[in-house]
Structures are given as C-alpha cells and as structure tokens.
Amino acid sequence: MNPRRFADAAIALLLAMVVAETFRKIIRLWWMFDDPFHFNILQRVSVLGTLYDKTLYNALGTPIFTPFFMLSLKSDRVWFGSNATAFYTHQLLVLVLLPAAEYFLLRLWCSRTTAASTALITCLAGPILSIAPVLMLRHYIGGAVLAIVATILFVRALRSGSRGMAVASAVIYFLAAGTKEIYFPLPALLLVIPEGSIRQRIRMVVPHALAALLSAAWRVAIIGPNVGSYGFVVRPGERLQRMATLPFRAVLQFAGSGSWGAIALTAAIVACAVLLAVRLRAARLPLAVGIVAALLPILPVATELQPRWAFALWLVLTISVAFVPRALPRGEIVVVIVLLLAMAAHATEWPSQFRHFKRMSDEAHVFADLAPGEIIRDAETPSVTLSEIAALVGTHGKAVYDDLELCHEAGTLRRVFEYNARRREVVDVGPQPVVASCRAIRTMPLAADFTFEEPGSFFWHLGPYAEGTYAFVINPERVYEVHRDGGFRSPGFPGVTLRVRYHSPAGWTTYSPEMKVDMVARRRIVFIRK
Image 1 (cartoon, rainbow, N blue to C red):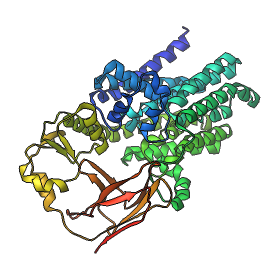
Image 2: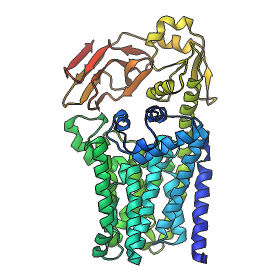
Image 3: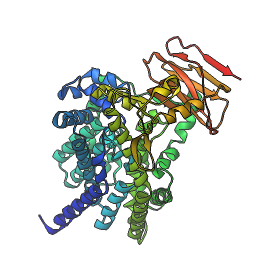
Image 4: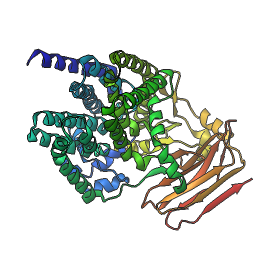
C-alpha cells in the first residue's frame, strides 16, 4: 500500500472509531418500535424466504419492499436469538461504515480535511441521531453505505473506462435499492455527476438501468405496483399544498428538537447548498437532481414527516458541504466551522434523544418481565410495540395507555409501574396515579366528525377545543394520539371501534361513547355533545 492510500485508510478507520465511540451507548438498548412486530412475522418464513415470501410482505401492511433488510433481521434472529446486545452491536458495525464510505467517496474530489470533516458532519447530527439507535431503521444506514460504494465504483469506472467496474457498481446499487427503496433513484444522480462525458456516463449507467428494472420487476412480483400513501394522511384537497411544502418541511427535520445547535447547523448546511448553486455551475444539476431523488421516494408519506424520511436529503446536502472550497477561496474554513456546529448540535440533541430511546427500551424490558396482575401505564413506548412484545415473549402483565376501564378496579391495583423522569427508570408507583386519573374524568363538550372521502381511508375533525390532546382509544392497551384534523389510510383495513379521548390543559379528561368506523360501509359518523 502506497503512503497516500495508507493515510486515507488510517483516516477512514479513525472516523469509524470516532462514530463508534459517539454512539457506543446504543448497545444498552432493548426492543423498540417495530422490532417485536418484525420478529413475530419473521418467525413464519425461512432466511431465504425473506427474499420472496409474499405472506411476509402482506403481513407488513404497507407497500414497502425491503428484502435485504428483512434478510438482515432474520439472520440476526437466527444467529443471536433474543440477545439484544448482539443486534445493536451489528447495528453499530453498520453505522461505523458510513463515515468511512463517505470519506472515500469525497476523496475522489476533495482534500483529506474536507472529506473527513464532511463525513463527521453527516454522522454527528441531523436525522442520524434518530436512526442510529433504532433496529428497524438499520436499512437507511446500510442502504446509504451501499449507495455510496456504488457511486465510488461508478466514478472509478468512468475514470478507468472499466465496464467491469460499472457492472460491479450496478450490483451494489441493486443491493442498496433492495435494502431501502429511497436509494432506487441513484442512477439519475450518477447520470449527472460531472465526470467524463455525457456519452460515457450514459454508457456506464446502462447496467444500473438494468438493475433498476430488475429491482422494480422483483418488487411488483412480490407486493404489486402499489406505491401509494399509507398511515396518517391529509384530505385529498390538501395534498398538493403538502407536496409543495415538502422540501421546507424535510429540511426542518434536520433541526431535531429545535436546540440552538441544531438550528444553527441546519441554517449553515442550507446556506452551503445555496452557495454552491449560486457560485458553482457544475454543482447545480447534480444538486438539483440529488434533491429531487431524495424527496421523490418520500412523497407517499409526505403528510406527517419524520426525521428518517429526510435522511436521504440530509446525505445530499451534507455531502454538498464538501464542495464549498471549490466555490470560495478559503472554503475549507467554512467546512470546519460547519463541523463545529455539527458537534454543537450533537451535544445539544443527542443526550435527550438517547434518553428518549432508553426510556422506551426500559419500558419494554420491564413490561416483558411483569407478573400476573401487574401493569405498566403511561408508557412512551408505542402501544403496538408492547402488544407485539406480549405476543413475542408471552408476558403475564398488561400495558395500559388509558385508565377509563381501570377506574372500577383502581382500589384493587397493587403494582403499577411508570417511568420516573427524575430517576430515569421505571418504578412501582402503586395505584394512586390511576385513582387521580379517574377522578379527573368529566362529562364535557366533545365533537367528532368521521368522513370517507376516498376508498381505503377515513378522515376526522375533532373539537371543540383548539388546545389540549386528542387520542383514539381502541382499548386500554391500544391508544393513538392524533391531531384535531387528520386522516388515516390503509387499503384493505375493514375499520375499527374506538372512543375519542380529550385531555384538557386544565387537567381533566373527557370521552366520547364507542363509535364504529366502518371502512367498508363508509357511512359518515357525527358525534356532538354540548
């Protein structure tokens, strides 16, 4: 190995070590979010079945096709069983590949200082903070690593004229698209990279086009052509506006909880992208195509954005920071300043982010060990997670997200567990919180209007209060907080019986009677209590 390559390898290794040290605490976590759901449905298929079994993808209930991610989870389950530490160690190993891969990509055009600084910017802040600790989001990171490697090989193919390297790039791209669908548009970005001639790029991208066709055909064969929206949605007449504001709302996801560090970093990264577009003609088309390619796959979920859906855009914009030295005489100073802002954003965002995940992890672990008659209430862990854990491990206790049905037995409750924010642990608080909650129930004005503007969806308007918290209570173990105005889309879902719950800022709670939302009959439901 010549000294230049040795230096690059050493820096890449150092970057991986920095990120490993930064996120090392994730190996303390347990199952969260969709982890137990995935484990339950993966029990029905073989390792290779994750690549073709239609029952697996039908069980997901969403038009998502991520076979190599499912293969990864199933393999972990086979190798590690229920050893969560091993799962998260695997997660950390995937994560540390990202800065190393990005560094090697940027070294194709940038100095070591710029490439290393930019790789750290990508990995220290923004959406990565909410992705790195979550097993069900591993494919965002793994897919990014594969997409970056595919890009490196493509550029090398252009520079060397190697068709074999172009084919290798296409194979890696195929793996990236099958890991996470947001990387499917990568060939469009490869086509506009300012390397070689347009004729060369077209010739070298042909294997990628074939890989894209194969990937699309595989998807259609297993789950069909559906790429429509799912989950929480807005009314049909509001969707154009939501789509028009998607870039702005996606960038807002970079700022996390809105700490000063995260806001400053977001502003700096956007400023760098604007600077490139203004001052560097060669960057305009790749930047524009990169932004479109990052946003296009998230259009179906553009209603209620979450940080992970902005991850591809985060990659595009943070990588663009590395090219500021080409637009400014002393641009490397700007890159280092952005790195310092990323470090500040990490310091202001990561501690609270990790506490949030640790709380959910602890709640799930305590719930799994509950004895008969014991309950855990007011958990931050989504209710569906704990219900899937119950199916996974056969817990004897109960998770309660609503106290209404407990009111008649509040006096007989003994061991009631809740998260104590001061002690940062789940503790036995006894029945008193349930008693206090039941005393706060009132018969107060409440209104709910459910409509069915399109098949497979229902929409609601709740009132009359502008402030406070609304929720749909399906049963004490299944509760969903919702916006006052909203909708839900799930084609094939027959409907649900629910109560509307309203928590007032004044401390009282009121409920509607049970209502059956029938997505087959699609009859409007209006409830008004004055």
